[in-house]
Image (cartoon, rainbow, N blue to C red; front, side, top):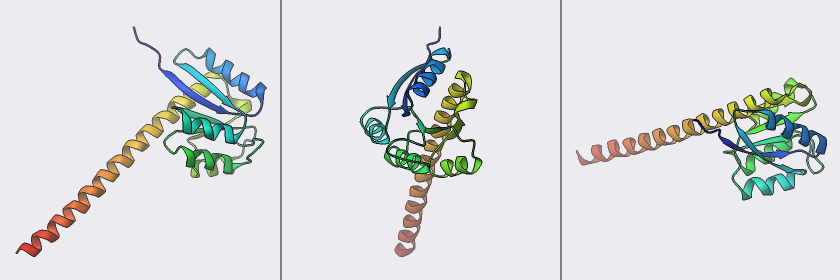
Amino acid sequence: MSTKPCIRVLLVEDSRSDAELFGIYLEQVRSADYLVVVAETLAEGLALVRSRPIDIVLADLNLPDSFGIDTCRKLYQAAPSVPIIVLTGLDDEEKSLEAMQVGAQDYLVKGEIDGNVLSRAIRYSIERQRVGDLQRQSDDRMRLITEQLGSAVKLNRHLW
């Protein structure tokens, strides 16, 4: 018997009706259990992402204290190892690419989301973040080995 994963979600959303709807979507998903914490402002979201373990952030770009891509940028700067999915009412390909460039893993249009779409986006974003983190760690190890190897070669030249 397999146990379902518990995914800790920070939902940064100032619309209570949207927050409730996303909560309902995630309750309907059977592949995982979602523990959702809601922040209504960016400041509240930043405090939460810094103070507790979060597996993923779902963030509206337009909040009372932040607007547009800057919202995503600030969340990413606060917690670069936590994947971010942007939730917006605007189907704007340019904005979606810009969101990806500042740290978002995905960009979902609110009117096109259901429980399965949201759950899939969450799982895929977490996995992409995990793979990216592993790749960065591997790159860092390779860089360190290369630097050490270069130092060893220089040392050997001086010994001859």
